[in-house]
Amino acid sequence: MKIAVLGAAGQLGRDLCPRLAALGEVVPLSRADIDLAKPDTIAPAVTALRPDVFVNCAAYNFVDKAETEMDAVGAVNAGGVADLARHCRDIGAKLVHFSTDYAFGRDHARIIPYTEIDEPAPVNYYAACKLDGETGVLSARNHLVLRTCGLYGVWGSGGKGGNFVETMLRLGASGKPLRVVNDQRCTPSYTADVAAATVQLLERGATGLFHVVNSGDCTWYEFAAEIFRQAGLNPDLIPITSAEFGAAAKRPAYSVLSTAKLTSVGVPALRPWPDALAAYLTERRNKPA
Image (tube, rainbow, N blue to C red):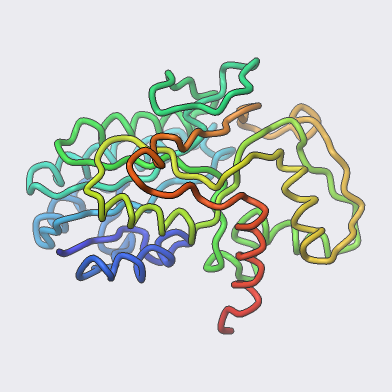
């Protein structure tokens, strides 16, 4: 089996590629190989590679900038993904695509995890484009769409703070007070766990839409507090509302995802998010320089 992975050098891609190698030949791809914002780069690469499975980890992920960079986010997350789905369909390749918990958010009274059959209702432009991309992938004959949330992985743990955990660790060590939103409830997820579940779904020949997140839920403030507890830091951490934070793009107040469908096909539930965080911090400490 030949498996092409676009976005192979990212946090999720770096955890996926070695695990996918158990299924066959893995071909890592970067934007230099396929740029989803440039349709003329997609068909030639897909046709030349002719993979059995194409895994797309690439996306425009700047949620706040998306409110003003509408052409850019739409070209990648909607148009580019739809083009990729069409070309994968043409050669008979299975397309695996990662989407977002931000598919939901307009139900302000929600307190029950969303299932795959719940009606999406995004609250920002980034999420609307990701949902358009989902629609394009779901139109393909052979597909696997995985919604996940708040990804963090050790390959985003460089000095620039490429994920929420790293940002908190950096700011927590600065000695300055930290204000973190406490009215957005979701499940931040460890890329190693999401990657392992993705491989298990492929092994089972699963198709369709699945939610893949760690177990449990928390607010970003609660997540930050647990990061500091496990890291042995004690910064001045202050809970605030989304309105006080004032981000350019709205976020869902509740976007917890149910993984009952995932477990129904024989993939074990991902470990609780505090345990996943502990594993991340251990892996981070042991990561080669």
